[in-house]
Length: 175
Ligand SMILES: [Zn+2]
Image 1 (cartoon, rainbow, N blue to C red):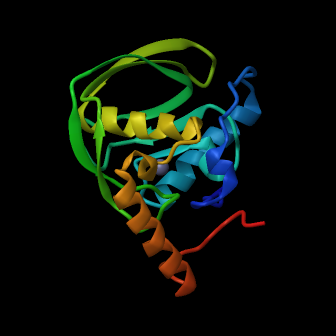
Image 2: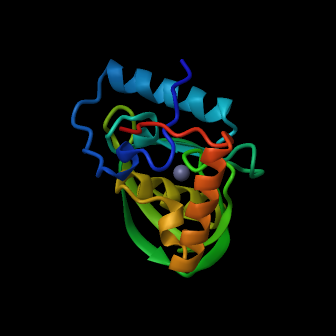
């Protein structure tokens, strides 16, 4: 099932997501739906808060972007080490149509659990490391635009407001 993606400035994107404790069928169904939703939107990653589920769950698919891409279901992720620096353009399904260069660690070691609760570690670098860092930010209520210098962030927010007024940007979760 394809789920609705929440967009900035929806408040669900700002909550700190809760750890997953039960590894059950409900979790597996959510992971399947997140994979389907990510693919339907040509995304390389999706975090559960983006579909209004405030839990520490990610899906990642870099198989279209890289020759030896990765397809990952990641629960309760934690970056246990990081090294170096890279600067590259990022976008986000929750901030559609906006792309900006963002600084990230070049190499990371990820510790997480799979959909059955089994722990694993993964060394990632370059593009995959960037995607993982971007998605983990979502679990902490952080968007890539928060990592921009303040003048750029202000310009981008103004641009989004203009797009909202023009009907070119769909806002979710407004009160
Ligand atoms: Zn994102």
